[in-house]
Length: 262
Image (cartoon, rainbow, N blue to C red; front, top):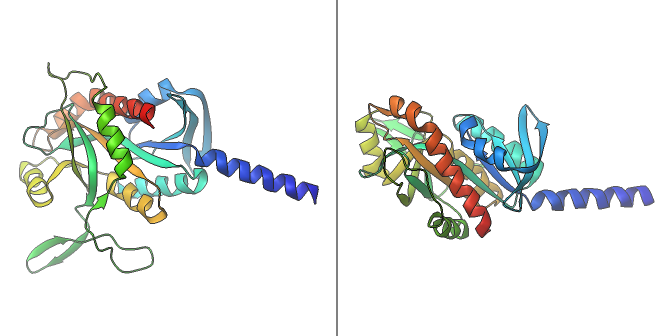
């Protein structure tokens, strides 16, 4: 009987400790490098083919993970993360293609809403984006998934306190707006303009909406922060290779500052 009580106490304590952790995800090594370098008391945990990094950032208990590129990898990593660690909230950090006409490499986009732009149906009139499907069947009513309002508020405040890296001789701008997710690296001006016009999206990337969908499904507050590595046009691949590291640093820098506000 005493052994059972001790085991129950241990399990409750473990769940409580995990629930206090803030989860931070990035798809690439560059996107989480500054976080791992800054982490205090870092410990690695291997689960289901993934490496989780537990420790403290800015005094906050965190768990950091590289999800891998694309919606499938992001969804898998998020599912394992949510099940194993039961985080209090989840922040995704990384780079993206900028879609706002005035956005340049290094600029920040804090995602107010996420949309999966390559999920839908094709009929005689062409392709139409559809809302996410529920795990139990049927569709969600809304096409766009809203980020957590409190995380958004604190991220906007934190952004004003960050000394972002200058890229090409200019200080980055900070935008708040919609982010479009799809399993494609956009490097086409027409496609970029369509995403901006049809969804009013300010950035495009390959993981955010998948992560948002899982977080919404289980009630975990989330936020996606991106820094533009390119403009999703014909020069996107060249610009990505040139600016991925400083852009990733700017995004992670905002995450670190945000942790001070939480």
